[in-house]
Length: 162
Ligand SMILES: CC(C)(COP(=O)(O)OP(=O)(O)OC[C@H]1O[C@@H](n2cnc3c(N)ncnc32)[C@H](O)[C@@H]1OP(=O)(O)O)[C@@H](O)C(=O)NCCC(=O)NCCS
Image 1 (cartoon, rainbow, N blue to C red):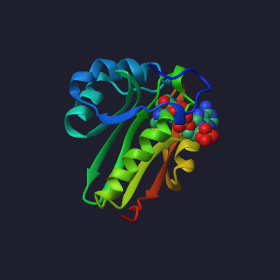
Image 2: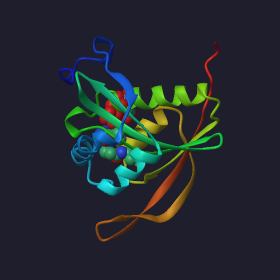
Image 3: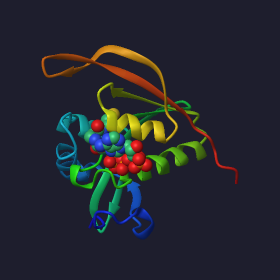
Image 4: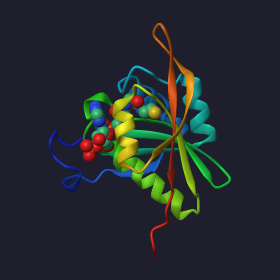
């Protein structure tokens, strides 16, 4: 189960593993509890089948999920989510840092992502992990009553010295 609120990750060791299509329903439940903008079941099914999807898990409980696609030496973060009740405990940071280090070790060079301009929690997460804004896509996302811009962020992946 998730650690009690206030207990840091240093006392608690969730693990990163690949996420399979057999976990589609659990992923849908997690993402619906994370925030207002969710992928459809078809989106997640397609990503679980075709992309690289990972989970942070402890005692069989999903704490965070993320989906990436890889083309040549570039990886794109397509989605990341943490259940609302577990947010602010470092789970997204833990999962994303682990995945970025693994991609760097596989000689991938860049990680791109798009994020809603209004998504302050996600923007803070990405900036903390070394992403910087390199552009914007005007009116990219639907939002109640209109559209909102996407920011395009880039992180240069760096291999750790062996
Ligand atoms: C964005 C999201 C994945 C972050 O997950 P999380 O596990 O809460 O993130 P972490 O606890 O690792 O926090 C990482 C950093 O993000 C920032 N952050 C997290 N939640 C925040 C909030 N509500 N407000 C402002 N900053 C926040 C902090 O800077 C934090 O670092 P710090 O604790 O060292 O200060 C989570 O809020 C979520 O699932 N949101 C809904 C789905 C979503 O928007 N996904 C992104 C799509 S682009």
